[in-house]
Image 1 (cartoon, rainbow, N blue to C red):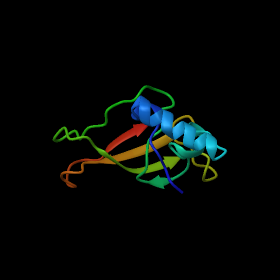
Image 2: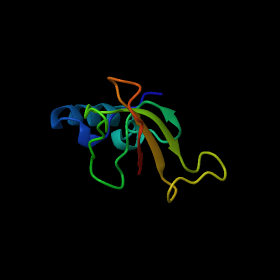
Image 3: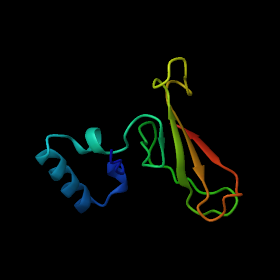
Image 4: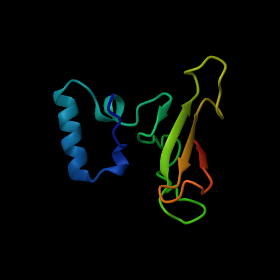
Length: 104
């Protein structure tokens, strides 16, 4: 399945086109295509609890890349935070830089 960026990560014109395309195909952009739920490697983030927060490498300041999302509720007995998502980020420049974590 395709995982697309959240609405606030797209320019207005592109978002309008994406919403029109989704509607023409019987879905909603923000519910059917963007920031898919579940465990995933890579993909796009949901910032459903906060506004968009830049995730930069703590060692060099480069924009970090989403490596893995672990979502509560997909595995019985697993609870991240208050049934949230644990997201792990890696530096795209140097893999030896520390991982960065975020819970949403």
